[in-house]
Length: 133
Length: 296
Image (cartoon, rainbow over all chains, first blue to last red; front, side):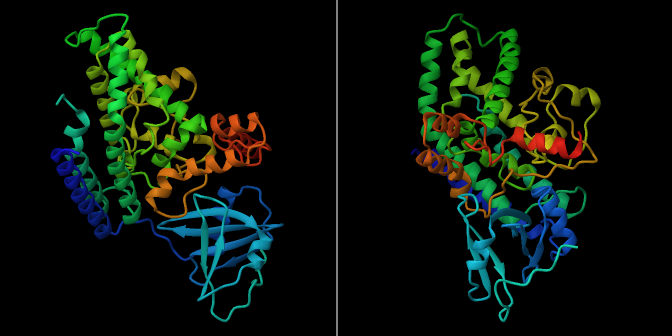
């Protein structure tokens, strides 16, 4: 490693900090209003087109949802200001137990190894799903 | 030190990112930045620079070796030589880029560039850490064998990279038709970064969009179908190690479970999304399903 390379790398790190600080200050992330049924259906239509929707559960903070589709659970959750979706067997949702107000599902996917949802502290699990209208 | 377009352009990259943020902040353009996404993109860019230093010696030595075994001697001072390398390098880039999307071994290195759900100037800097180890740089060796000096090849690659920076923006909608017809533009490249089935595996161009038009991979941006950015299965967080390596780890897991040579081949060199039972869905599968649903 030459001194020039180290200087260039140091300057790059400083520039990154500056640009990220600008991005945070500007507050120009995509708006992510609390999820409602219509928004979830819109997301599912793109992410899981044609999947039958048997019932919908929306997380307590309305930043995620679990949707039953026959024997599968379709997961929708926020990462930053964008939604991530995955599917997992419904049995995994039933088996999972909320802890400290969150339900965390482990997924066999290196790109998204867990999905976490806020749960009402007194809520029973698995939840009673609302039928998809 | 030779002329390096990327190093020279770096201050411009920084100023342009800040300018785009300020324009969006003051509602002069519809662009979104999310701080963690921006940090991930920029850290990927920095890591790519470090990785480039580590592998750069091998690439340079191989290119020089190829040039020493050249067929012709092409002078760096000739205008025709620069014109020729402009077209040849850009066509090489097209095929490199197409390979990087259509075969998983190369997609594993390239996909990180597409892993952001945003499309802004910081996304341009979300570069690979592992592009050097999958050998895709060998695609440029024919230029050295032909007789283009290694420095000339490096400069032309740098020019292409710098060109491709500014097209990563939503701030520019459409350019005049003659430009859209010939050059890769923000509009064409938005299509390339989109995950809508219609737009998957389209617009591989570097500087000139003519290659996509010639080789059947061109798709225009449609106002009625705005691009949704990212990869088919978006990542669950902003961990840069995950961004850089998750597809490689996925390949490793698949190879560990492979039961035949066919499966090994498919997992390594099949299209992204290939699986023995077809359950995962390749771009072609997604497009076919979309066509069947919509009749497009």
